[in-house]
Image (cartoon, rainbow, N blue to C red; front, side):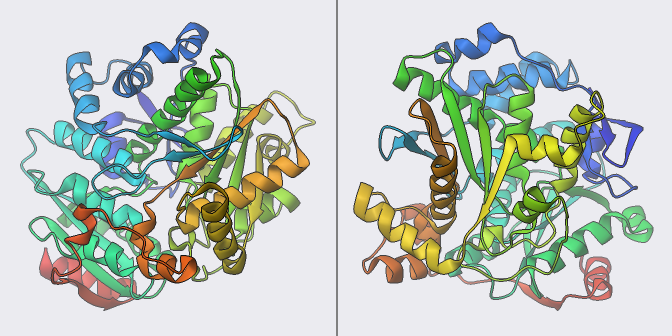
Length: 448
């Protein structure tokens, strides 16, 4: 398996190099040289496969022998140990619950797969691998849980001070051992920028072996494609159809989740359309509407995991849709993208109203991110109504991770799973830094 940089299609690296480096020197992102198209027979008969078996079939075709199949199967089986159930709101709208992993967020799928893959590829290395990760909420908790006590790997998590929920913060700051938390006085974009600068800093890279666990790392992205197939499998079973019409509504921040869905579609999964659902940080919906990409500082919202002002994975989306535009001079990258993706944005007030509406109408407690996805799906259906289309909203985090807001919105206590509740009384351990790269670089050199 070879991967190229989105900034240079002639720059190829191996799977191991792409996974450990995370980010090419040219500031692009790694993409697979070949995206295999899975057989139609496999996709039409997904009901015959388990979730881990689906993940193995995808990985086997994508990795092209880069990892021996018995080892790859073990990686998948150790990573995909919890379900992604489809829960019906009504006959047309469903929630794909992605919060049944250890940190109660969809990012558990990517983090656990990455931990297994990196642990495997790191065998025989003498120098400790230092993973740098920026989080707006859920990534940090998933990475912390996925890599906790992994031999030969240390994790440094950067998060914006005061901009994650209290229980999210406890997930980042209470594990200890090989997990270190850095509280940045700034935004998620500042955290992400610090991580990117460290990867491009020659002094830091000479001193440390660095790796990334953000969605900029291709190893995070690949397993996120698995649950699109898993959702499709469940629709096949519910509808008793081999080729159901499906629309995915994807709450979007850094756009890794949506990019994974587009990769699943490129691998042959029949998806009628994707809906990019955002909050006030509506940079990509604006692009889809106008063709102008204008990143700006992120603003804080109720759906904090989507508070991203310059989504990293947008360059991957551009790369994918530019490739499909090559064969037709009349169709631009922008036209290709908006032909497959619609974008909608909603403010906090509408998000709160949606949480209440979903609870009252369906007796379902949706977290703020899924509520935005619900609103976006409704808007899409208003413009593209089809009785035969199944709408799937990605429910990306357990609502109790936003307990204070959820309790206030619903006027009642939201139940907290035991594995999250036990964190409430643990002591926070984090280092507070300003948002300058010089401060972060000094901390790295003096502490690690």
